[in-house]
Every structure is written in structure tokens, then in C-alpha cells.
Length: 257
Image 1 (cartoon, rainbow, N blue to C red):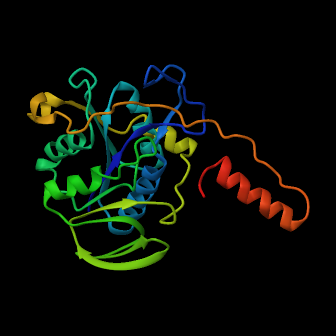
Image 2: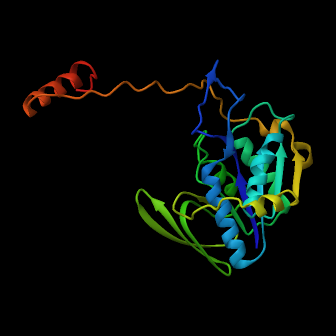
Image 3: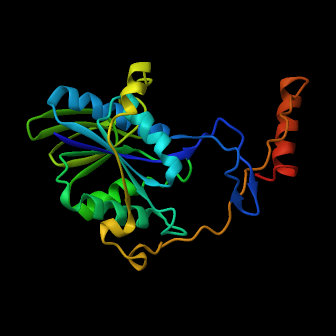
């Protein structure tokens, strides 16, 4: 089975993020594999172990993105591909990403493509569905179960706290979320093996793409941190007094009544 995982390098949101002049400051920031993509890597390895084949992780980024690819290789992926756009693209969006990936997959004949449900930095959830549409294959988002029997695929999908059961066929693209599996930690032997696993680096020119074809369709107008939360307030006194004070606060201060 020819399995691919779409990987993205994201900021570690557990660490402090600084914004200056409408831009996130990269210096000193910690970068990780997008957490939802870890579920995709784990599921790819599980499906490969069950059905054979190989797992290739793919990311679009810069030289520093190699670290996240090596982590995925240490988890158990077989190969990695870095599409380096650092010198070719000043900016891009989900449209840009999907177009680059479409060109990459032109001669790949994938059976299964997995991605994270969303990226925690922009949280658009668009890249997977956009790519599937461009490749002309079915896709299912926010999956919590994936079972493959020959060409038949049975999927459970989260829908607002309920479960939708879907049957489709290979090839298929799915986006993964919490509850699908428990991503493994890279082991020391896995880390050592990852150093010897193949990591291919491509550029835009290698995919026969022109910058004009990749012009983003959206524009980020501003980036800012959310306002700091004010301290909570404890109402005291009898219940009736607390209710009266609460109503007064909602009406006069919060102005929601």
C-alpha cells in the first residue's frame, strides 16, 4: 500500500508566542509537528503494518522543517520529502499549498493520504479537502476510526459529538483527529534509524510550477494576541442579592442585557 502523510511544522502553543508589528517572532520560538498530524503519522504506520507497503511523510517548508520530518521517521515512517519553498515563495495560503501538493502527487499513485484535521496555527482545515478535490479522489474529515479491507474502506467520523459511519474505496484522503489513536513517542533505536532513512528535498522548479500559479487567494491583514483575561469576580451575600448584582453587572458593565 502506498501511504502518504501531509505534515506541517507549527509553533508549539505550549510555549510563549510573541507578536511584533503584526508578525509572529520566529526567533526563540519552538516548532513541533502539528499535533493533529501526529495522529495521521501514527495511523499511517498502523495501516502499513497491517497491510504492507510504505509510509512517506511530506511537508512544505524550509530547511528547518527537516527536524519534524526526522521525528516522523523516528516514529516509524519509511521515507520523507521536503518541498523547500524558502527561496521561491514570499507568501502562500491553503490554495498555494494544495497546488504544490497536487503537482507532487501527479506521478505518485497514492492509495491512502492522511493529514491532520486542522493545523493549530491557522486552523483552516482546508488543505486536505482541497488536495482531494484536485486529485479527484474521495475524502473524509475528522475521522476517529479507519478500517481497510482490500479496496473497501470503512470510516467513523466525528459529527458534533455523534458518529457518522462511511463506506468508501481506495484511493482516499482522510484527516485525523484526537480519538483515532495514541501517537507513539520516537524510541532511541527509532531516532538512530531515522538518521539513515531517505529524506528527499525538492524545490518548486522540480515540480514544473511557476510562481504565478501559486499566488495566494487570501491575505492576512493582521496578527495579534488575544487580550489578557481579567480576574474573575466572586459575588457574595444572599442568593437574591447575588442575582440582583449579577443582573446589574451583565446590564451595566458587560452590556449583554
